[in-house]
Length: 109
Image (tube, rainbow, N blue to C red; front, side, top):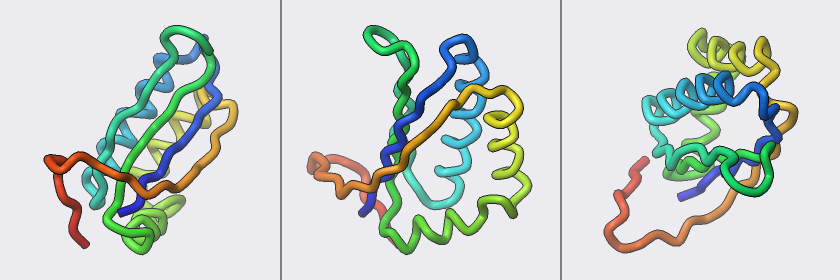
């Protein structure tokens, strides 16, 4: 398994647009073979940092999902929310290997 952790710098004045962006991507990840663990939005502390975590069965499965970027109309529409609203100022992607509790759902290729 591979988990993608995305750290976003967001515009605090555009959190509602970021939430629309996030909901679109949660749906796309789930429909294309991943498990989305959610977006974590500013609450206390930093007002401009958000996180997203989602897992795919392997890096190869993630790469199949990534091939849709810029091609699939639904992926383009989700990115358009970010681009047109300016809700994301920057983001950084990191890949991690999760250690999950025994009762966590399994992912299969």
